[in-house]
Image (cartoon, rainbow, N blue to C red; front, side):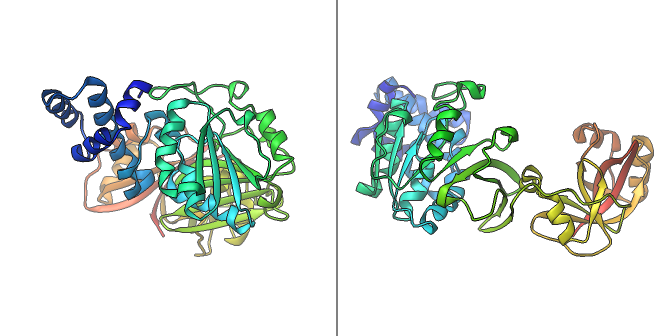
Length: 395
């Protein structure tokens, strides 16, 4: 979306037309809508904006639920936006710390600012891109004076009277549609500026979960977050927003429930042990936070193999921080022999998981030619140079 399209859309007639068009889920539906709207005499820029927004609203439901139906988006902004359930948890930390006002520096389409304003925290949101800032202003308009938006660079914002900051540095090229990731040296604002700011004012900065750990400052809490099985982000918290004595944290969110594991530092891995009755796969946030050892000790488990994130135990203990599997038996790792063994056991539905081995599960599945009414999980890994194929059931 460019400024011409946005100007056409942000009128009473344009917004009314968007509501009338309703959701557009497929390319065919979009083509029919374009033809219908053009035939009705609507200008091309308005048709493009309305149809584009109708499609983006459908995609946005995964992140924003029912709120998506009254929001506006850019394609790039939606891809990079924090899902609303996670934004609400971020906002909860600000509220718990007694923060009354936040500067959201690099607000994008306003996902995190929505979470803050929804809890009654005053938020001043800025974005360096004019179209994105205008969309954020629309999305935050229902909150009135609780949420203000400006078109500005993060570095130029006056923070006098602000209790805390929230930052989401631009990590992709500029644009509203197709963008690409850039190196950290090209982030805006720069990491050096962000880290200097966090030393002077409480705040949080959202980064990718694969951020280089050697660049994490020593005086912040590093919190890795997973949502419904996917590790989605790393947040660095400073000042009173950081938990006392915590430097490593893993927040695991599934639906409306959440669990957090914290530690003062990286946790040493548990000792290696032989395969037991259970195998446990730590959540991605736990792995990223390097807290596998904490989980292993709570489960009375050991490492199945050094450097590979599978734990094993004889105890039936499990945890929200792991996926647990009861081992049925070890099968041959050779694909032909493995296929024969699975057919002999009538396994027709198979979940394939792997760690530490170079296997493409989709390619392997074709080779296995599964048949039968049975269901199981196949865990592929290695211990030293030996490959393991473990038939198991989720606990």
